[in-house]
Structures are given as C-alpha cells and as structure tokens.
Image (cartoon, rainbow, N blue to C red; front, side, top):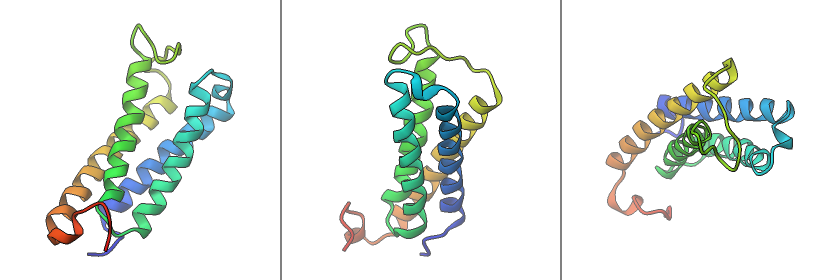
Length: 133
C-alpha cells in the first residue's frame, strides 16, 4: 500500500481547501469573533497537519482524521446556522466561500471514509491498532 493513494490525495486537497477558506475568512474579520476566531486558527493548523499526515504517515488513522476534520468543521458551521448559533455566532448558507468550504469538507468526509475503510480492510490485524509497529 502506498501512502499517496488517490483517495488520500483527494482528502488532503479537501482539508487544505477548507483550511485556506478559514484562513481567508480569519484574515477578513473572523479573527475578531469571540471563540470562533481562535477556532478558525485551530482549523487552519489542523488542516495543514492532516494533509501532511495523509502524504507521510502510512496508517489508517490519517484518513480517519480527514473524515473527522470534515465532519467537525461542517457540523460546526451547520450548528452556527441554527437559531441557537454556535458560541453566539449566527451564520447563513450564503456566499461562495461558505459553499467552497462546505463542499471541500464533504469531500474530506467521503474521501477520508473511503481511504480509511480500504486501508483498514487491507491491513493485517497487528497494524489495525492505533500504535504503528
């Protein structure tokens, strides 16, 4: 199994696109939003770190992290669009950056799930643990 499978490449690109959108939005005002601003920085760092892991770490956990990244980021935005909002922030499903991020996060979920499931099935039982031997 090579580290750079097509699904891993797609997942890496998807998390990088989401990280870029969050960087752009942070630079354009979200850095001043209480709680959400710092969470955007976490998203940016996590997206870059997960993309690096997808290219360098031959373990099923790397694509699983991409899946989790996409699900938590998209889920957080979806919560922010509800009447209750997220940490007092209320968002709308409007604007190109919102849709670019949402699509990239959905792709990260699907590509991460696909890659992780294939790698888990192909890995011998001893490599299925969280600790690589």
